[in-house]
Amino acid sequence: MIRWMGAEDDESLEAKLRAIAEEIGGSIERAVESLDLNEMAERLGMTGERAKELADLAGRWLSNQIQTPGASPRDLSEAREGSSRRDGPHPLDMPSEDQGLALSALDSGRWKVDPGTEELVPIDSGPGPSQPIGLVGELRARDWIASHGELTLVGRDALKRWLARGNPS
Image 1 (spheres, rainbow, N blue to C red):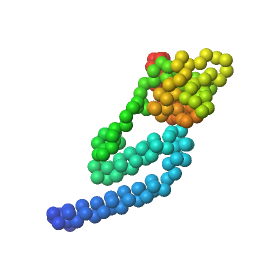
Image 2 (cartoon, rainbow, N blue to C red):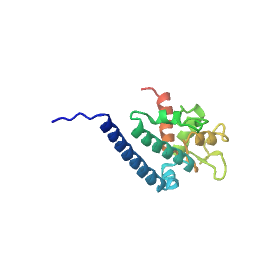
Image 3 (cartoon, one colour):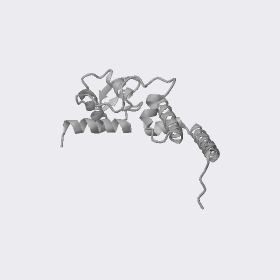
Image 4 (cartoon, rainbow, N blue to C red):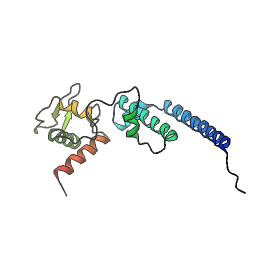
């Protein structure tokens, strides 16, 4: 026999579901707090601050999914109250010619970031970058290279985009 729920039952069910969602959200928050974000950032080749920002965004998105199913992480990021949008270049930008060449040379080991500087230098006697200073900052600002000059996952994707643009198939 099917029993139709009345308004009182609807409110009770809603209250129970909200309590469950809050408990799940709290569990997720506690789990995120116990993560070593610096270690995770190092493994992913990004700054600790960027890892914290991504973890916070993921946590907010998950929490928002419980409250508003169907919202995308980008929607949440753009709608955050009390926090500014990320200023500066975006990790998914298309690399310029100089940036693409630098990513390629870093990936192949022809260039490196000179330790203690923000300068790209050739490994051997080969040609160096046309603008060795400033380019490292541009690559780091987009999270394309890690602190020692290794390409990050995002940097490898940027290199792939740059190569695909230059070599249409």
